Length: 430
Image (cartoon, rainbow, N blue to C red; front, side):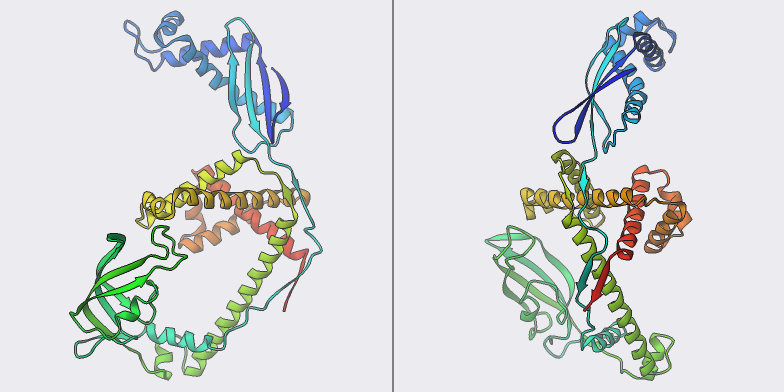
C-alpha cells in the first residue's frame, strides 16, 4: 500500500491511497462471495452463484463498494498510524478508481485536531469574591422547613390572601389568539412564591371562591418566547379552591420531628453548618471557574466550521432528548424562540465546548496527565450517586455504548486537569 498526503484548507488532509492490484482483486472476490450469501438468485442456492451471475444480478459497482468498505478501514487506519495523524473525526472517501487487474486508487479526507496555543496556565495569582452567607439565610432556611411541614386547610369564608394557595382554571389570550400552553385546569398556584408572569398572582389576591374574572398582564421583554416578548395578555380565571397554609410552631418538638435534634438550637446549629459548607463549595466552584476561564481566554485555537457544525448537531440531539423527557415538542421550541436564534445559541455553545475540550486535552498532553482505572471508577461512582445506582450497575448499563464511555472518560479527564490547574495556580478568596 502506498499513501501520499496533501494538506488542504484549515485542518483537512487528503490521503491518496494505492492498493496493489492483487489485494484489490482478492477483496473484490471476497465481496462477490459475501453478497452471494444473502441475495436470492433464481436457480442457485445462496452462496453458490458464479461470479459472473452475481455481477449481472447486483452490478459490479455494488461489489466494488463492498470491497472498498472491507478494505479501507484497515488501510486508512494504517495510513493514520504511519503518518502520525491526530484525527478527530472518521475519515471519509471522496473518490476511487477501481478496475480489476489494476491498482485500486482511493482518495480519502481526514479532519485533524486543530493546533492549540496555550497561554499561561500555571503560576497564576487570581482573586474571587467571598460567597457571603446572607443575613436572612438562617431565617429563610427555617421558613422553608416550616413550609415543608405545613398543612393546607381549605377556606371558604374569605377571599384569597397573598400567602394562600389558589387552585385555579386559567386560559390566556394575546392579540386575539390563544396562548400556546397558556391554559390549565385546577392548577395550584402558590401566591407567595409564584413564578408566573409578574402581576399574575397579585391580581388573584382578594378574589373569592368560585369567582370568575379577567386579569391583564404584560410578558417581560426577556421572555423566552419571541412572539410573546413585551406583549399584553388577558387571562380568564376561575378560583376553584383556596387553601391556607398552617405553619407548625418552631419549638423543640418540631426540631425533634425534622431530624436528629433535641432542641431548636441544635437544629439551628445544623443549618448554620450546612450554610457554611454551601459557602465553601461555592467559593471552591468560583475559584475553579476563574482559573479555567483565565486559562481558556489566554489560549488560542482556530476551530473549523465543520467541527462546530458537528458539535452543534450533537447538542441539538441532546437538547431534543431532554425536551422529550419533559414532554415538550421540539417544533414548539423552534416556534417560540425562532429557528435562527436557536441555532445561533447552539453554535455558540458548541464553540465553547470544543475550545474547552481542546485546551484540556492540550494541557493533559503537555503535562503527561493520563487516566487510570481509579479515575474512571471514581467518575462512575459520582455519576452512580447522582442517578441512585451502584457504580457497577451504571458501568454495566453504559458498557455497550462507546459514546457514553467516551463522554465519561472526557469528564474524568476534565476533573483531573482541573485538579492539576488548582494545584498549580493560586486563588485568594476576598
